[in-house]
Length: 346
Image (cartoon, helix red, strand yellow):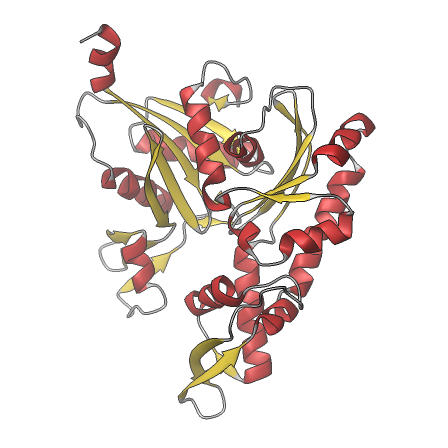
């Protein structure tokens, strides 16, 4: 047993993609946690009852003694205590090797439009779970690594990462973000659009979880798809009678509901292309645009962006995990990548 192996017993390295909708953790190259970013808290005692999937099952179904909290809003920590409970709860799901001696090293993924105060909040949350070494990485950078792009090359690549709270659009070259657009319109906004549409058009009230299921099953960015999904049955409360009712929703209705939000994402892509230096623009003309994040799974979105920009659009393989996979690569090479942020650089 070599010296390195001996020290590995005491080392625990985690790559965390702290997302508005889901949090993923990679350890030793494997995804060990993939849970919704939500915490259930007892209002009376203030203690955390559940995190992740268990808390999600309670979401919108609680009585007044329990509240469910999403600690992250628009990609940044909005509720510090809940965020710490979430990170601690998810890390505890992983088998800790040796609680007392472990040297915990974490790389956490953050949106590119984050402020210095918000960065400090992420560092503080990591300190509370006893992290000895903490690094931050910007989401588009992590996504680029996760897709397998060589970020250190003097070649421009444009990444469009559509998450739960934010859409990050960035042009990357030479280990840095040359220009970026971060807008707070993404998966959660689509859910709100769907809820409002069904309330307006069908007079039915549905919850956030149902809207998410509609988006997953029949979500579409285009009215006309080559292989349209079958209509989806939606249960909710009839606003006229107050009685539960079911309606069928088609992908065309969802495309109509989220049309304005998708248009805003397109505008942000065009804005980012406008401010891209000409030499990098010529690279992007050849390489095209890369779509990652949960929003990349929206049917027809790649075609719609391609029609708007007249550029090829590639959807990443397994777009949901691209960011955390990239964060995992950064974790393995913290000494090599200059774009990682640590305590000293803020």
